[in-house]
View (tube, rainbow, N blue to C red):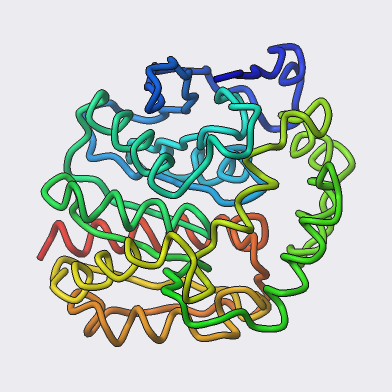
Length: 305
């Protein structure tokens, strides 16, 4: 397996990004070692809040939430999925699959031996994170699903077809521009540059370019059976499960992903589910402080109970 690693200097001096880089080694199916990057802030003896990003972002998306959660006494951890951020990037698109991503996060989770986790997952962070939840239910205490879902072969709507057509027509995604078109607030030039930083050129984007094809939308998509298995698991998950969506998100909110999660997951019953009127797909950029307050309240109210 050919593996690319973004030069460290690409991450020097990024605005609002002064976190210590931490790494753990995981292994691909052929035995290739891959370095996975994460940020770990706040008191180490506090139960962790695990923040999982989607495509084509990285843990920079969680920078304000990391600080906010740590300031409220939480241990806040943001992971870079393999192929993104400071994590290693297999260069061949065929090296990426949902099962591979789940396995890489699984290896990292067990290696860090995290327990009593609050999972906050957005976009692909939800697809991957909810599968990992199924394999390690005893390690998780609660879930916040945010602008995410778990497609299981229901078909491709117009928004997703446009994304599929666009993403597969180019050799390199305009990452910063994509972030800007999916946030309500205006990102600065420095912030846009930070989102572009992990990808010196299109050769580093194999994971980002392959992700759209991996979304298990089509009935014959290879990821559909795994989704069905995880939905069966979620139908028995009675620990607290909260949804927090942005009303401007055409990918997850407008198709109603939050409603299916609320309907199927027993732990979602009676929760104070939230929809933020002025938040788009990359909700962390639009309402980061509000998400911090929501997670803090969610964790503390459950701990008190």
